[in-house]
Image 1 (cartoon, rainbow, N blue to C red):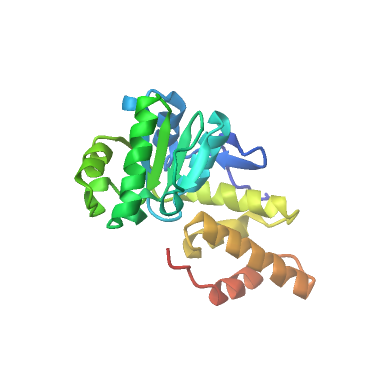
Image 2: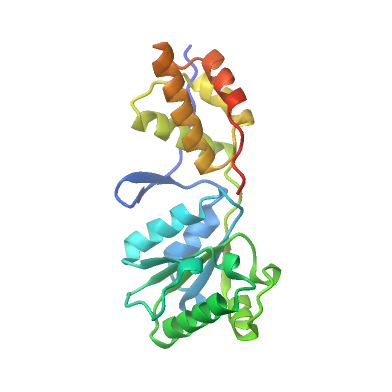
Length: 223
């Protein structure tokens, strides 16, 4: 009997071009975003590199018509948006000018009741912020935590990426890939691109032999 992977995960539209899968590793964070009743209208989405923070923030931004900004590149002036996403807020810790800009943006969102979603790799108490007023506001912000992707989520995304390239891969190959892959979404994209290129160059389907050889050539990216 042919083996089949069970990928019974809900699918959500992402920017109208991708699928966003919900699994035990992200379901609580997804539910928090969906409810939208965040204390003070603000939420900090945290999780390690590769856990899908940016992806989920983009899904929310698309649904809310939100402006999306990178904390390190916040421009002078305050954005005119009905909702706001600020990515990688932990990366500005220690930069007083950048912290001040985020502080003003935070207060602007609060004053005008604009929903504010921020992303970071950890909770604010671990960042080393130098602006006490910003630190106190962020430490009072509700948290939604993304865990590293689990096997069900990684398998579903792998199958989706292969399907996007019209590549047929045996379920057994996907199952055998899971213990050896870079367990991040960026890593999955790199892997599928490399496997596609290897199969095309050899004019052969992706077998476990090809997959194993490709894995040996890839090294995880530094976050």
